[in-house]
Length: 314
Image 1 (cartoon, helix red, strand yellow):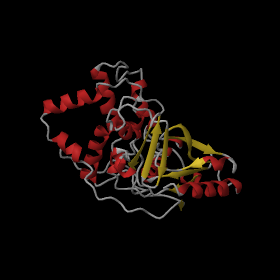
Image 2 (cartoon, helix red, strand yellow; image 1 turned 90 degrees about the vertical axis):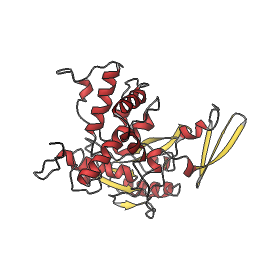
Image 3 (cartoon, one colour; image 1 turned 120 degrees about the horizontal axis):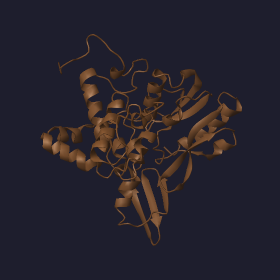
Image 4 (cartoon, rainbow, N blue to C red; image 1 turned 45 degrees about the vertical axis):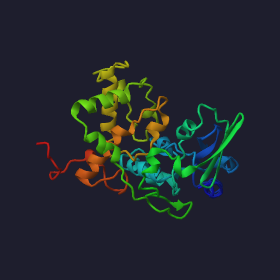
């Protein structure tokens, strides 16, 4: 995927020089290992700062809602699915966008690599093909990148962009994997076991709302947790308030979540937030045969009403 860097720069320079866009949203090198940062190039000269590798996990679609300018954006498979949803939900117009499609082989999970180092601090990380070399004070180690992908990337079945104006590379082979093994294990639990599981899952939550801020499907003008008239949920870390926040947010993105992993990636205490959203993804897929953003003119099932909607709960 590193080969995309030059292609992104070339496309950005061309689009900006020809004034076809006002900016190009991509990534530039971050100040910390494994953390490239979102960046908008506004001039052909700034395009030379754009990069692409396995450290571009942030979903850039998060920077599109309510924009009024003409934008080029680099989009992985999951990003492109969120862009489709945003277009359907009138967050941005298709004619405003020039989408640079980036077939993806997954993003590196820094936390997994860090866990292998017995607390040693990573000061530098270098990616070369399918290898990642990390180094710090008095140590250097190389990892197979494919073994240390974000969990959502390891089970991704839509690596190629579903919507684009030009592609940065040839489509990659899609994976044939079981996406819901962990969800099925939870479904098999007794009710008391499920409650205990989720109570323990969210116990570390500090209600920082990083998951909400990072989510490209969360763009309500006022979030339900910020409403005061009426107040739907308390702002404390009381277990009931915390549980309510996580369950309601998951239901809010049901049928709209592309499983990009932004929520888990941003969580400062490492909560596996995707256990909530994946369960609802599984239900929507089984009930309606729908996957978020895969069909560009088809609205999410929970966003519409049809007389023939399944109603097994009645």
